[in-house]
Amino acid sequence: MATRRVGILALAILGLSAGLSVYAATRAPRPESAAIAAGQLALDSPLPTRVPPGVTLAIGDPVTEHVLKHTGWIKDLPFQVKWAEITGGPAVTEAFHAHVLDVGSVANIPPIHAIWVGIPVKMIAVRFREDPVDHPSFELAIAPKAHVNSLKDLRGKRIAYSPGQIQGEIVQRALQSQGLTAKDVTLVELPSPSADIYVNALSGGLIDVAPLGAGAALKRYLDRFGPDGAKALKSGVRDDFVTMYVPESALKDPGKAAALKVWVKVWGRAQAWINAHPDEWARVYYAGDQGLSPDDARYVVEANGRAVLPRDWSEAIARQQGSVNLMAEATGRKPFDARRLFDRRFETLASDAFAEAGGGGPTLAAR
Image (cartoon, rainbow, N blue to C red; front, top):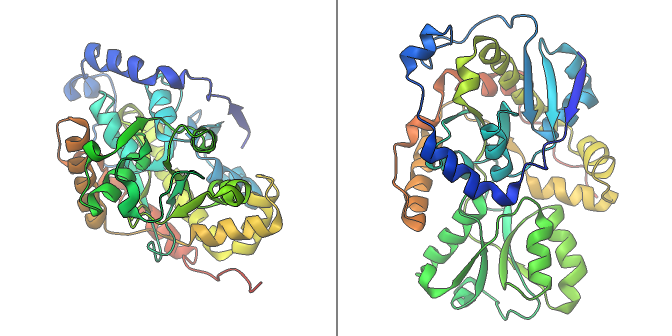
């Protein structure tokens, strides 16, 4: 079907905290009974089985967008799509607040932060990685003159910190593993809508340590500043929890709920395609779209590892509860029951589509 692209990155990301604080303080949640009376879908009602004509979803998931366009599956969607160039939890949550986005793909921390700032959201898909220890999503990038050779050297260092993103949890857990707390370091609150912010702060000597994506971002940093002494350390933190989350308002719209049911299945199929076509994915996306060299593209695909979509979300809920408790203590927020974040009507949809599409697939061809 026809697609349209909307640019949403100019959403005043730097004003996120202030804007969401005002929103949280002034907006009262709408009672469920009132929503039902207005013709909306209850959050515990069965998902609709048919997408009505005229439904549009605004989706912030550039990776899946590229798979669908490359394979031609985009033409089979029974709804219209507005593709949003959005990455990073703060930008996605702000887009929900501005009512310009229906679904975003992030790590597991942004949905927690959304609840704390008064934006009710639900997670509708869960993805892990095979062998997450050897395929971390992030590593701790070290500034050239920081004199950090192991995690025990973090004491007294200036560390980039974003409490609303997975990078914040990685920092907290890395400190915890060394018996350190925030009082033993200087946490420099620095949201990371792009890796360049952390790279510039590291290279400029403003911080000593920052979590960088273990793929292209880290490789570029080490290629450029490694000769000056920059390095990277594995955090030892499992950081492979990726989710799609949506505002509850999208789930209360029967047409959008039906479209999201379809979208989750397509997303699962796309994860299986990436697993099954690593060389092609490196060539068409990381080299062709992202502009990496062929060697760097292959490096990123290898670093990313392979997706696993669990059919039972029990482990995901337990992991999310641990994240809620950790970040609540770190930020002074009130912990809550992580089960409220999961819409289990979607629990098996992506994993079943993933399995039906092959799920596994080959690794990259030998160099």
